[in-house]
Length: 88
Image 1 (tube, rainbow, N blue to C red):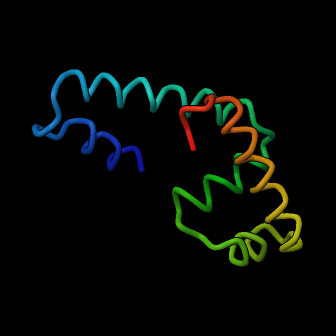
Image 2: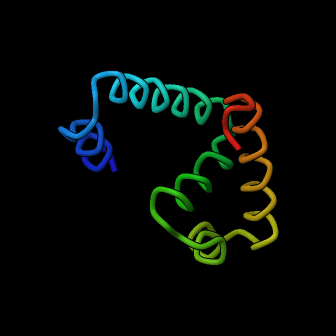
């Protein structure tokens, strides 16, 4: 994941302003993720960064599917709140 982000941020087609903006966005997302509970963060990272479905996450974490969905939904709501109305 980190390599993909670095490649994206170092693309020559990005202007310096775009690159700075993306760097700021990345930092804001990392700070917002750090404010979530460990469980919420783990579930969201597995879902978005690893591309795992909620069912696969439930299986890997030995957790009920409803719990995974609830924590993902709550985590996303908190992220939206932490990041402000700019994230929709």
